[in-house]
Image (cartoon, rainbow, N blue to C red; front, side):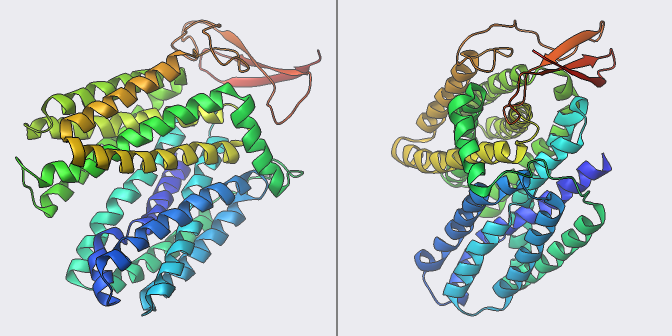
Length: 441
């Protein structure tokens, strides 16, 4: 548990690199003597572009390299590059370094598969929930902290602070990160991308998870983007400071999430995703019905959408990691890419609909997106054979392991390790798994 908490804290402090710039864009534009359009809009775009490219080209390396060394190297690079942000007086140099910092700030997405590898199967959901909560807290905390520090000092102090924070992360990672062995010694860099494409085409579960994550991410991003428009206009007309306080409500939902981790460990992931999605639909309907006329509805929706989006996300990651033990970094990269595409969709479509048709039309549209997620999930049941695109074969069991009796689970072969054997896993009443011998066909 201590190691998972340290992973979560590390994720919080590293992912903050992507968001320090957002509250200080006006100060950056003034400091570099450019208009907001020339500087303010370009810098966060470059940071996110670097992060997206890092997700695709760096995070899958966790399946072919030692992750301890990879993580330490990335933190050294990001901390060193941040020195350049703190001292440069050239906008072009600042923009290039911002892109490179986004590229090297993918450490949390390498930590998450590592946490899944280190956790026993019965505790995997809890481990993932802690790391993911740290990731999301980093997004919220960075914006608040950067705005406060820059308001009382200078934007350069924000990046000096970041250098110190990343130095702490580096020291903690050096002392605590285990040297987990390489899982795919014969895998080439090009082979990584071939296998990722193969998973999308040949594994129905991967496509189901990516579609669900894309739609869920679009809904969640739309909520936070359009919330500023809603609260800043009539009938609320709140100031920027008051609007920012709603981030604390979202933060409460994120902090609550790890307490549900033990429950998620017992549920079949498909069911926890279904329940979370239904709850998201309910809270979105509250927003659709009263979000523009009652601030209580906005607060309730804010808490519920944050809490159950994180519950849904953890369950989707747990399900994705169950597909292959030797390809978790690549599977996580596919998961985060679908989230990243959803963020783009939610931001662009949500903004256009809100501005053109109002808050209720925008909220109703994304209610439909939650219904789309339910359709995608229901088309393929919780125990459907892995090679089937549709169906509900295998039943609809709710719990992973019956608490009142023993059961035997037959795990099919990992797609990375082709062969005709099968691994027998015997589970006791306490849920402890014991590996049996490989049975020949």
